Image (cartoon, rainbow over all chains, first blue to last red; front, side):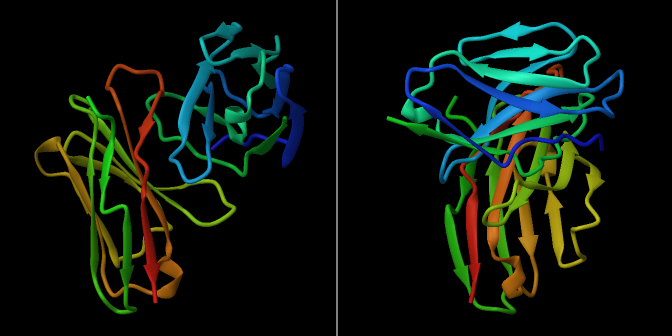
Length: 109
Length: 114
């Protein structure tokens, strides 16, 4: 399973953008980049995924480096409800998702 | 569709007892996954079904653990002779066959072994 590296924790302020980085230098050509988040006492929740091009959805944007060795999850305007652990996962579909430690995001009011 | 449903939500059992958890995936989702999560850690993969076939099983899963998915619908995870180290949140997820990885998770079953 290809490995990802994320900061243990990050902090941001409400209504400001948040950029969550993920390094994945050993990514293979068939690996998709997935982001999930887990709110306290909840199961993980899908956020976004991509292969090569940047992706946008109603929750977030995913910016993928040209060499695919890193990516950034962008929350455009953080709210208190975005406080969660964010996981960056590499997986060639339809393989299982292998979770790391993730980044614990704290949002200050 | 109410999403992935797991029962019970909480289970307290004495060491040495057997426990069984149930997962009802989203209708028509062919793939079903079981994960285990301990405090402060990310979910650990346990096993994976494609319809009724168990396609992968983690080395973390000892022979005390068994999972089934009869008829490719709901799934059960049984732990025999529970140990205190089995205390964790057990998460189930499902995904559609044609998806590119989007998995939907249930809220989990929290097991406490005393």
